[in-house]
Image (cartoon, rainbow, N blue to C red; front, side):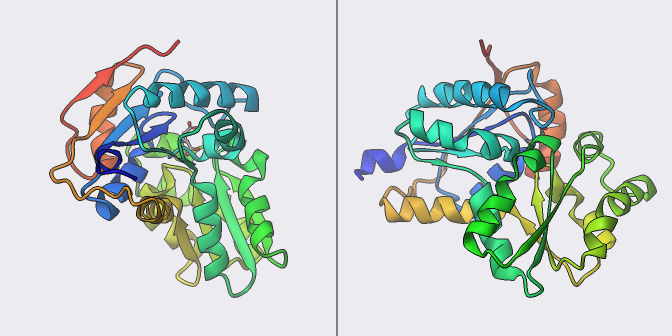
Amino acid sequence: MSATASRKPIGVFDSGIGGLTVVKALMRELPGESIVYFGDTARVPYGTKSKSTIVKFSMENVEFLLHFGVKCIVIACNTSSSWALPTLRRYFKVPIIGVIRPGARAAVQHTRTKRVGVIGTEATIRSRAYELEIKRLDRSITVLSQSCPLFVPLVESGWLNGAISSQIASTYLAPLMRRRIDALILGCTHYPLLAPVIQRAVGPQVALIDSATETADEVKGLLAWSESLSTLRPPRHRFFVTDEPHHFVEVGERFLGHPIRSVERVNQR
Ligand code: DGL
């Protein structure tokens, strides 16, 4: 690819705020890259919706990002990655990376007991996307899945610690622990923020697999392979949302680990 291609931004979309965990990992791994982030805050959550709705929204999100001449698109949202990735890849020429394969690959590398747990939204678990990807890599692995619908509102309300969060985590995770998993995929954008609570619930012998970090590695590999890595500093990041930016700015800083200076509101059809 040319030097002009290197200078193009990376597009990232999510159903809302959660994808900022992926942005944080991208900024850490690829500090020279500019990012255009699109959070569909007016239509969040995707995790309770049907496949056709998730695919429709995801297509519109990609179309939005293409206006910025992005060199690749990262689907930060596990729910979108689970249901929409194959359709998006068929429709659009731009390279599109989801979070499922990188997370699944890391879990396969980690497990010794060949028992892997997956947690995510209802839609992600219903799709069986992680399970199918893990089985594709190693058929001998048993995958135990559990949806954790209360985790997203807990994180967005800032309940990252304390007795209630611990009790909810232990209740969700007890069935997986009875099956002696030794790796647990945090298959939702919000879950890395609950990592300390989840780790306490499962114990130190279970490795937590953060799809965000694994995906940032995958993006780095793709850009290196296509010779379109940018070393340009300082990068320029832009954030777009479909609802009032206030909540995004306030809660988003918790996800990103530093202040978000400007957020623009756009109207999605
Ligand atoms: N971003 C979603 C995910 O990673 C969680 C929030 C939602 O349900 O939209 O699955």
